[in-house]
Image (tube, rainbow, N blue to C red; front, side, top):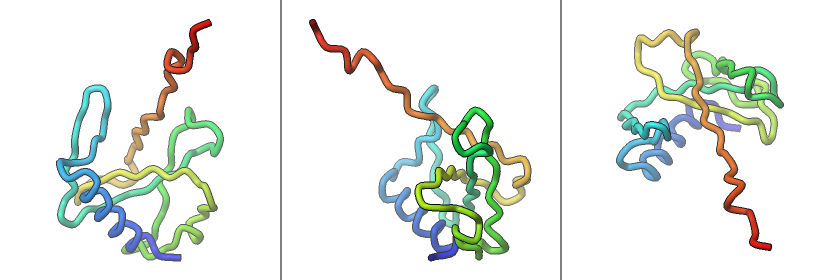
Length: 112
């Protein structure tokens, strides 16, 4: 399995291709974040795997992102959040803001 350094590189390429004007980082109000030439990602997992209300914790990906997802304890179908950080950001203070999809009940209502 590829180390996080390779995953981050591939993620940056995919995001640039999919979102050339910038990554939408918020829906309300809409905000976009440009993907820098040399992005730095941090990754997180749920504090409690079945309850997002408990928040997220940062994954230690090792120096230079040398650890693999398996070494970091990730399993198949693990939920992983990511965010862009800048040099000088305190990685211990990272807060993952994840917006979950909301199902619109009206879309599925059928006329009697």
